Image (cartoon, rainbow, N blue to C red; front, side, top):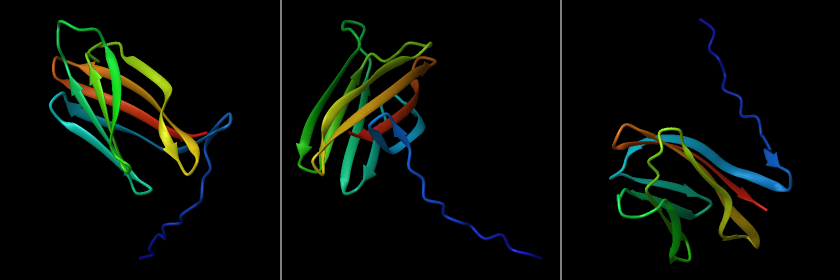
Amino acid sequence: MEHSQVIAIPTNVRVDDQTVITSGFALMTSDNTLTIEFGGLRLEFVFSDNADTEMSLEHEQINEKAIRIRLKNFKNALGSSVGPTRIGTLNGRALSLGLYVTAVGDIQKAVSYCLTLG
């Protein structure tokens, strides 16, 4: 039997002058934290739903290597998008986040994300 060999092919994905450093998809519940680690940095995405407030995104620096992003009321079944919006700096370049969140029922979230450097 012949074995297949996995070949790593370097890719370079760009959107205009922005270099995509990571992108992906996660299915989660509102009480989960989505954590993305890359290049020694950590991003934590925390969702909360509250009927009394509007949809919002806030980010805070936990320390020089970690950012917490709070997403409030991303509960539209048709989806809600943000960005790209600048959330920090990495190696002297602007770190930006693009996000698309779709509510799946009352508690699940389908999250698509894209992080870029400009």
